[in-house]
Length: 209
Image (tube, rainbow, N blue to C red; front, side, top):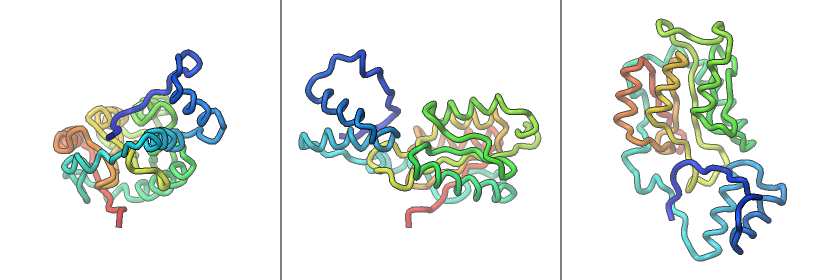
């Protein structure tokens, strides 16, 4: 089995559950599976108990997991302090199973990902005072989206698509940082082209060695 895409959280009280559903409900009702990472591990366990292997989507999408280094002509060096700060924060929030994405501008944490996902998080930037944000002429702030340190990489590795680039550009961010080989793109070359067009840097990190 390959699991790909977002997973919605249904209202379990309104579902008619079979034996497997009741087992799952017992697991998540124990209070030990609050975050996405822990919930997904329960899902993996459910399939494995039935003799099914859960395989990483990235094993079948080799050309869509990103490349190391700068991918557009737009400079990321001027934003290195924000990048370093965002990586540091993402490591902490990820280790707590909170989220994969962080936005930092001028070394201030502007927003972190919650249940709404990365795109919802980027939309929340519109509620910030303009003093914290960049402008189309002077972009500021970086989105860093990385796998959680402890997550099972067979499921829910970070995904970036055109919508993410559009929202980052609309928020006047300077660029996006991802883990090369540890991120799924709906179409990597198209995402790179869109980031170029929108004036964003796109930087792939080598963090797997």
